[in-house]
Image (cartoon, rainbow, N blue to C red; front, side, top):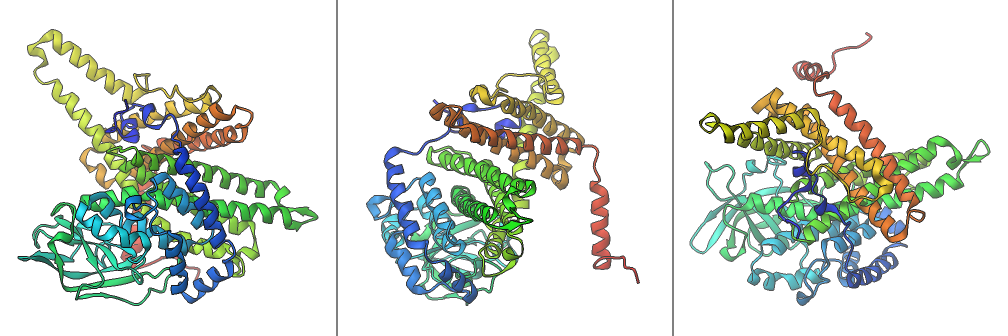
Length: 580
C-alpha cells in the first residue's frame, strides 16, 4: 500500500528515494483510453483545417462567437465535469492529453479550453459543496457558462497576500469591492472564481474564494487586452463595485482562500503542461518536415549536424516534459495529498522546454520562421506567457527550493533536539549521538544510506539510475551545506536557492523519464524501446552536467558581483558605458 502523504521530491532532499510514488509508470484505464482516442480524432477533425482562421483571429485579436459555439457543441468545456452532470468525467491524465491535442493546432484555442477547466472551474470541483455543484456543473459542462480565474491585481501578482479586493460579511451576503486584471476568458466568462480579503485591513493573509457570476449587479468586464501572444483569447480586467455575493457562493472555508488558490493551481498544472507538450510535438513535426525538404549547398538542411542537434534536443525535451506531465496528473488522480512541489516543477520544466523548442524550431526555419506567413513566430509569441502565468517560474523555483530546505531544517532541528539530556542516559545517549553523527556525515559526504536506490528501474538504465542515485546524495549534501552556511538568511540567497531548485527540477524529471522508459522496455522489449533508451541516456547526461555546475557554485560563484552590477544600474537608471 502506497503512502499517499509522501512527496517524492521532498523526500529526495533528505536523501530518500520513494520509488513507490513513481514506479511503476502510471497507465490510463483502458476504457478511458478508448474514449480519449475518439476524442483526440474528433479534435483533429474539427481543428486541422483551420490554420488560416487561427492566423486571422490572431491578427484581429479576437475569436469569433461562432467558433466558441463550436467548442461548446463539441463538449470541450465539459472535459472534467462528472458524467452525472453532463460532462466527460475525464481524469487529469485524460484531460491533459486532450488539451495537448488542442494545443497542437492553436494556443489561443487551447488556453480558452484550458483556463475554463484547469483553473476557472477547478475550485468548484475541488471545494464546491454538493449544492454548488448541482447549481453550476450542468451549465459549465455545456459551456453555457464559461469559467475564469480571478486572482491577480495591479499590485498583487505572485504576492497573493497583497490582494486589496475585499469581501465584507453582511447579514445575508458578502459585499465585494475591487478589481482583477489579466483574466483569461474574461470576455466570454459568466462564472468567476474570485479571491478577496475577508479578514479586514489588518489581516493581510486572510483570503477567501467566491463564485461570482456575471449577472450579479456591480460586475463589469473591460475590453479585451491587446497582447503579445494568445491574442485570440479574450483576456480582460474585471471590476466589482458593491457586488452582493450570496453567502452560499463562498467557495471552500472562510479565510481559506490561499489554500484554495494554491490547490487549484497545483491540480490544474498538468493541463498547462499538456498544452506545452502539444505545442512541442507540433513544432517537432514542422521542423522535421522543413529539415528534410529545405536544401542548402545541395543537401537537405536536416543532413547537417547542427540541425540534427536542434531537432534531437527538441525530442528529448518533449519526451521528458510529457513523462513529467503524465506522472503529476496521475498523482492528482490517485489522491496524493502532497504533490505541490512536483506540480511546480512540472510547470517550470514544461514551459521552459517549450520555449527552447519554439526558439530552435524558428531558428531551423531560418528567415521563413520570422515571417507571419508561417506558424513559428506565432507559437513563439503564444508560448512566452507560460513562464509567467499560473505562477512565475522564478517564484516557483523559490517555492521548490525553500520547501525542501524547510523540510531539511526541520529534520536537523528534530535531531538536534533529540540530543538534549543525552548524558543523563549514557547508553541511550550514545545511540542518539551516533545516529545524529551518521546522518550529518551522510548528508555532508554522500555515503550510502537506506532508501537511496532506484533499483526498480530496468537494468538497461542502470547507468542513468546510478547518476540519479549519486545526485540524490549530492542534493541532500547541498541542502545541508546551504543551511549550515546561510542559516535563516537562506531566504535572501536567491541565487543559491535557484541552483538547488534547478537540481531538484532535473532530478524529478529524470526520475519520470526513467520510470516511463522502464515501463516501455518491460512492455515492448529493449529493441523496440531503443530510441527511448537513447532519450534516457541523453537526458541523464544533461542532468549530470547541469547538476555538477550547480554544485560547484555553492561556494565558488560571482553572485555578489552580479548583484553589485544590478544595484549600480538601479542607481544610475541604466547602463553606464559608451564609446562617445
